[in-house]
Length: 139
Ligand code: ZN
Image 1 (cartoon, rainbow, N blue to C red):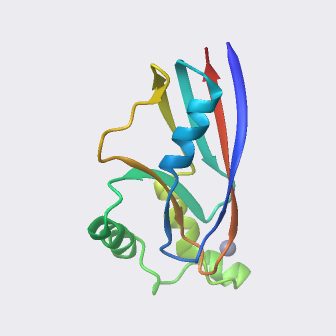
Image 2 (cartoon, rainbow, N blue to C red):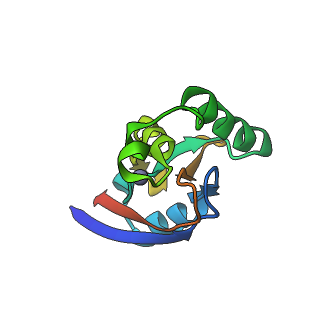
């Protein structure tokens, strides 16, 4: 049983930025030589998230629109009253989607659907440098 850790460094353009990490992740899994196991993808930070989506222009538009309907920007947040950093909605959106996903590796490949990409979601109000932590466990 192997345990391998790695990171991906990202530079986001700020709120609503969706970055497709699928190609990088597939390459890292390939290089790991793990045939059977899991890949955990975790973003370090409380104003970002990781999920899967079909990475096409329609959904890249629809997903942030959904977030602004469910967690609007223009309502009062106690976080903003306390810290005055104006990103209460970013924190709530980030917690809603979550910081991490795990994908099974079978026959040396991520078991993603053909139209399923792994994406990083920036929810903070400004451009950020981000570290995405990867851990592969398997043999
Ligand atoms: Zn904050």
